[in-house]
Image (cartoon, rainbow, N blue to C red; front, side, top):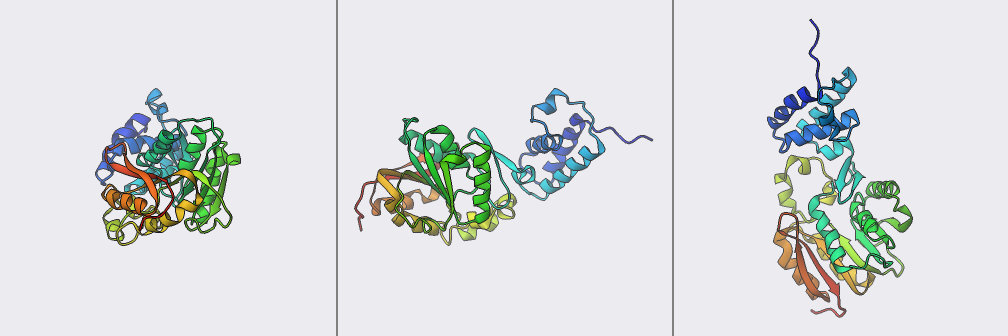
Amino acid sequence: MNPPVWTIRKLLQWSSPWLAERGVDSPRLDAELLLADTLELERIGLFLDPDRPLTRDELDGFKNRLKRRALREPVAYIIGRKDFWKDSFVVDPHVLIPRPETETLLECVLNHYTDRNVAWRFLEIGCGSGALLISLMREFPFATGMGLDISREAIAISALNARKTKTASRIDWLESDLLHALKQPWQCHAMVANLPYIAQGDIPSLQPEVALYEPRLALDGGVDGLQIIRQLIPSAAQFLAPGGLLALEIDSRQRQEVVRLLESNGFGSVSSLDDCHHVPRVVFGTFAGGRQD
């Protein structure tokens, strides 16, 4: 008796409920992404030839990816990339997976610096995959930037993504714990940061994809989630040009306290910006000079 012929259509019909039974939130989408990656197709290619049969090697490759996803490993780590803003970025378990909510940081800078043809200078602290800073370089063709991260592996991923997007000549990458490695005077027009802001006690209750697989170094914000943000804010002004922008991604519950921290450290015009889910995601302000105790 001949074995069954597995086509794209049949595999998606079978694998979507199989993933759903194992607690995966978006089983159909994830199955499509994993199958497209296995077949080295764009996702739309699955629907252009749904009755295409898979070879034995392709079937084995897809099943291997499915098993990893059933263990709640994120799709982005399985396929090695994640879309953010207008590009696709290489990711691995050394870096936080870029999320649509973080695009709010990019929108904050775009709103503040409306002239795209100026040679602005941007600094990102905790650059991870480099997706945010690289996206800024893509939107501001004459800008230059520097990305800092405490993780050497993350810096390597950022540099790889810069080469892929042809922005490497305009960005310097530096291994640094916050701003500590900046020994010489260096000023930027905007400083952006998606620092760890999850309270330690909340990490075990996060989705398994996050709690089990994403780097703890990029998640753990101390007892109340604000430990690292508190360290950054007082030292940020010395690296900002007059009127320079500091924009921080936060948990929406932290908005009021981060506003207070910015205002008490000499920042003015402090406000917040909602993300794609209509909740406060970014708190920002411009450095006006003079600390208020």
